[in-house]
Length: 585
Figure 1 (cartoon, rainbow, N blue to C red):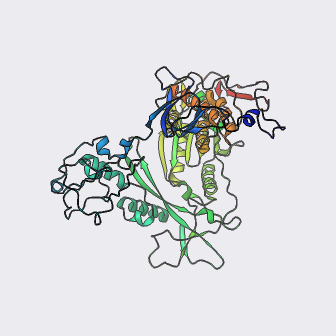
Figure 2: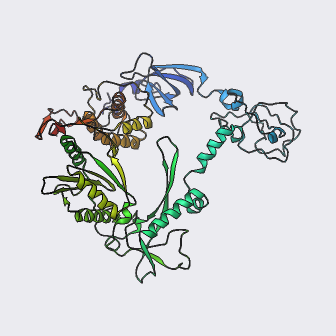
Figure 3: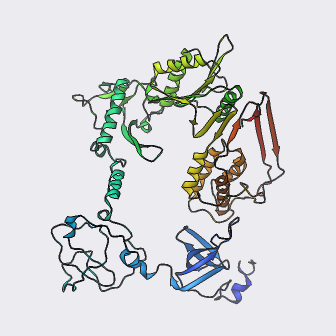
C-alpha cells in the first residue's frame, strides 16, 4: 500500500525502481493475440476468445493491453494467447484484391472488348499497351494481367496512379476492396440506378432537376394554395419575416419498394421571437394510461375500434398571431418578387402549430356535441338520452373512435370528413407503434415489429435468448466497469426499451434500473441492457391481453424491497393498477 512516509509510494517501487510492479514477459508489439472472454449464458459452440492487436502493458495492474478493431473495444487481461509471428494486418492485405480474392468475370459489352486493360501491382509494375481514346474510369479495380509487357523506360510521364517510387510501402488498410459499376450485370446495374435515382436531394435546385421530386413540390404548393395558407402582401414597416425550406422524405412500402416521394414546406420556427411571433405553444396529447384505459373499455364492452388519419393536419390550424414568411425557395409568384407571405393558417415548423391544430380540431369535435374529459383533454366523449356513448382519443393527427352508438360514430366520421381531408383506415390495427388485434374474446396489444427493429439495429436478431430479463444477483452501481466510448448509443437504446414497456410490463423493472445510469454508462450497465435484448429475442410477440372479465373494479398493488440499492441503501418500490382485471399502469 502507498505510504505517506515513502512520499505516497510503495516499498516495491523504492527497492526496484527499474522493475515494473507487475512483471510480464515481453511480447511483440502489434502482433495478433486472442483474449479469452467469458460471457454469461454463452453456449458451448460460442467463441471463447476475441481476436485483438497487442498494444502494450498496464502499469497499475497485471495484464496485457489489447484492442479489437472488429468490436472497437479495449481489453485488459492476463489470459491472452499470442501469435507473435503473425501481424494482425498481414502483408497479403496490401496486395490488390484480385490477388487475394478473385472477382467473378462478367462479359463486358462489345465496345469494351477493344479497350486495353490497365494493370497495377504494389510490388512490381506492369503496364499494358497505351490507352485508347475511350477513358477508363478512375474507380476501376485492378484486374489480373492478360499479357504483361515490358515496363516503360521512363516514369516521368506516367499517370500518378502508375508511378511507383523506390521506397517500399505497406498499406495496412487496403483501398481496393470495391467493385466497379462496369463489372455489374445488367440487372444489378438497373437496381443500382433505381437506388441512386431516389436518393434524398441535398438542395432545392437538385430536387427540381428530378421529375419525381419536382412533382412532389408542385403538388404540395397546390395543396397550400387550395387550403388558403397565406396571402401575398408587402412587408409592413417594423415587421420581420420567418424563413422556410423544403424537407424531403422517401415513403417506403412494406416490401421495401418506393411508395411515393414526399416534399414538405417547413417554416424556420427557430427564428421566431417569443411575445412577437408566438405566445403559448403547449398542446395536449393522449397519455399512455388513457390509451390503455380507452382500449380496455372497448375490450370489456365489446366495442369496435375505428381509426382516422388527418392529412396535412397542421395546415388546418388558424393562427392568432401576425406572422410573415418569405416566399418558398424557387416558387416565387410571377410578378410578385418583393412580396411576402402573410400566414393565415399554421405551417409545419412554427412553434404554435401543434396548439393551433389542436384548437381547430377540438372546436370541430365540440360542434358535434362531444365534451372534453376533465382529466385528459385529448379524450372526448358523448352520451345521448338512450345511454349510448361515443369516445374519441386523438394523438396529434391520429384519431381512434369507439363506443356503443354505431350510427353516431358514422355521423361523427362524416362530420370530420366535411371539415378536414380525412382518411378512414377502418378497424384499428396499428396505433403509435402498437399492434392491436381484436377478436370476440378480447384484444391483444403488442409491439413485435418495434422489438424486432431494435434487435436488428443492434445486430442481435440471431442472438441466443435467455429466460429472465435480469439476473437477480446483479447489483448495479455508478462507475461499475470501464466507461463506454459511445454513451449516446446506450441512451438511445434505453429510451427505445422504455417505450417498449408500454406493452411489456415484464421488462419495466430492469429498464428502470438501467435508466439510472444514463449520464455515465459503463460496460457492466451495457451488459445488463444486452441481457434485456436477449430476453426480448425469446419473446418478441409477447404483449398485453385485454378482455371482459365480468367486472370493472379498480385494484392496485404495491410493494418495495428493503435498502436494495448498494450505493445509497435506498429502497425501490413498484406498483400496478388494474381496471376490470386489465393492467392500466
